Amino acid sequence: MLAALRPSLRGSTLRGYVALTKPRIIELLLVTTVPPMFVAERGVPSVALMLFTVVGGTLSAAGANTFNMYIDRDIDATMARTAHRPLVVGTVTPRAALIYGVVLEAAAFGILWWGANLLAALLALAACLFYVFVYTLWLKRSSAQNIVIGGAAGAAPVLVGWAAVTGTLSLEAWIAFAIVFFWTPPHFWALAIRYADDYDTAEVPMLPSVASERSVLVQMTLHTLAVIALSLWFAVEAGAGGLYWAVALAGGAAFGWQLVTLWRALTPQTAMRVFHTSIAYLGLLFAAMAVDVVVRLSW
Image 1 (spheres, rainbow, N blue to C red):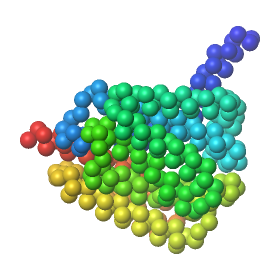
Image 2 (cartoon, rainbow, N blue to C red; image 1 turned 90 degrees about the vertical axis):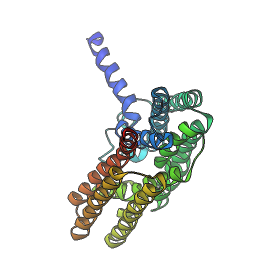
Image 3 (cartoon, rainbow, N blue to C red; image 1 turned 120 degrees about the vertical axis):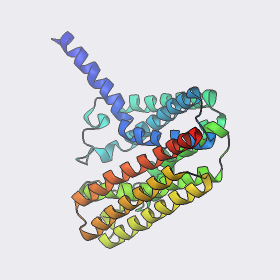
Image 4 (cartoon, one colour; image 1 turned 60 degrees about the horizontal axis):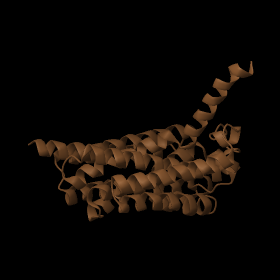
């Protein structure tokens, strides 16, 4: 019987290690890594460079997420949304998770340095350190502005992708970074509205748990307007074509409209529609960056 259980236990442990990296979050980060590479290249970057950047960026984000779960395992145990996580249920030990995170970050740094350049590697490492020490250890448990400042870590993949191509950071790169930076709070606050009770229980001061509804809506609206404005500024600076402009305008309108529905009825259901719309918007916007470059090259 014990022999029969071993494959099941190994599979559960493997799934636990994968879950520590938060794969769904990594997918979104990669969406903001590759398209800026096309804009920076003013064409199609080499497949090898994209591969090294994607692999290195994936490992770096995976390491940062693993450290986050290691630090937040006490909070995760109190929240229904996170109570199934590996360190809570015991499929991975805290010590193993910590070692795993270190190995992931070391591998990420080496791959990015060797396959891209030192600046890209340093930016990825800086994003991890910022996420772990500034957001997770400090701001998350102490400030309602936690995700506002902490969002810089989630926006860093834009800079990593750009630096991998050029070895420098231009104004366009920083504008694209700012798009993700200002996008993160309304995106995350929409989710926090849905799970406000969880954050109350865990005593984590996410804005929807500690501020009035009007204050939350005003902050979400201001950040969304900033995102839309930045997306258009990026088009000007990058010399984008009609495809990008169309997606930026239509996507911004759709994102903005969801905020209007949230003003009309602030409910978990409308908040989750904002959350899902924000993901679609960012993905389409960044995809349009790359496709727009390819389309203009073919003319």
